[in-house]
Image 1 (spheres, rainbow, N blue to C red):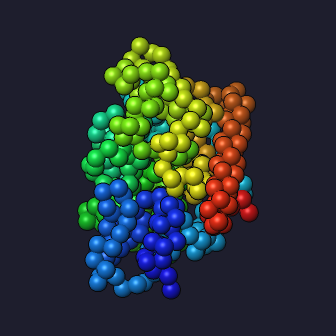
Image 2: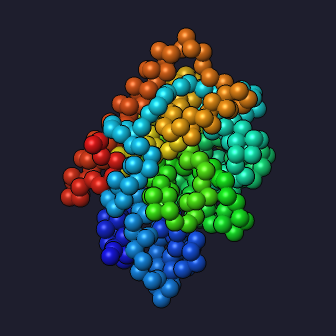
Image 3: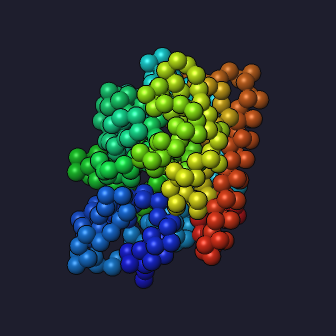
Length: 371
């Protein structure tokens, strides 16, 4: 049986670890306490004497092939980019949410609806610390959810504050407080690798995955380190000053919205200097294992392209469309189809990049293959 030692050798040392926190989350959820995350978000043995070598941390890792078939059956995964029941263009109907949210603010609006209707009693999200940093956060009210709205350039793996490592998404590690507070219906908002780790836990029916009621996935071109050196180079490439920046977003390109209304764009292929190494090997762009997937790709400014993947996700979105979410009119069906095709193309492109990177590494892909 393979253990955390094998994860170090097979995943961490080759640079494949996505720092999703899944292995540490499980170990702490069952009170083993053998693992922890260091200041850069890497899992490590914090107390090797407590490790019982159960091997579950290895199986949970989204970067290894164990439980692939079981996890795919759980969500009815199908080629080429997971199950897609429908694609829609939508936005938050509330002006405040729409203005504060990323793209169309649909994730925030949907969470508001789920909280209002009692479908969830919490949501694992992130909240901003400043323009560059976010911290993992367990939202337990509508005010908490609204506070978490918006896009910030960072890649949160669960650590709260650390040097110049800036973090954009939440962390599986933040599931710990769910158990401590006895929450049983929680929505998790995360990137493809994090959603995959949770689904693998659910396939094994292990803690704390039974508390996750909804998996809301985010399109992911890659996650970035934005320390002082990276910020200086990005400003030089984009021709802007950081004191002019109002907000940031990633769609077809890296977008920098300035206070005067101008939008600077930087092609994503020019951002390799700030992309995390492991992202070169990830082949999931559209969060293929989520209930619903969200992103701005293919949508006009102020709208979100939503992929409906499971009956649970479809029901939740349909209910929200009666209250907090506005769907683009049926006459815009062609726009939704074009947006879907664009997401599909970016998915294919990311899979090809991952395969090429793995070929150079000499390590075949075991995740998110097209068959």
